[in-house]
Image (cartoon, rainbow, N blue to C red; front, top):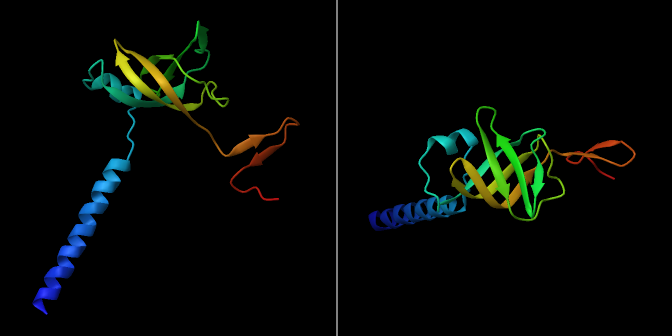
Length: 133
């Protein structure tokens, strides 16, 4: 009886340990603009940076898209060299992958956060979450 109890406890401990390791490896953390400017990051360290695109900050320079993002407190200039998603626009949330150098973030990958509303070409708004045919 005591031997079975120890085996069960070891099994539960192993399951908890494995679950913790798997969860930590699959968790993606991104920094806000304020956090990025306050922590010490080397020029070669790749991080994920999240924020909202500042209005009237998007421009093109050669093959680069240049814009500014903010978390409401601090702004960071972004130089983006990559595919710009169709949903990318001002005041939209983005998560960028790249490196920080002299308070400028050089990114080569972008995810655009969007809401669940779709506006058709005739102006009708649909909530994608609640929409059914």
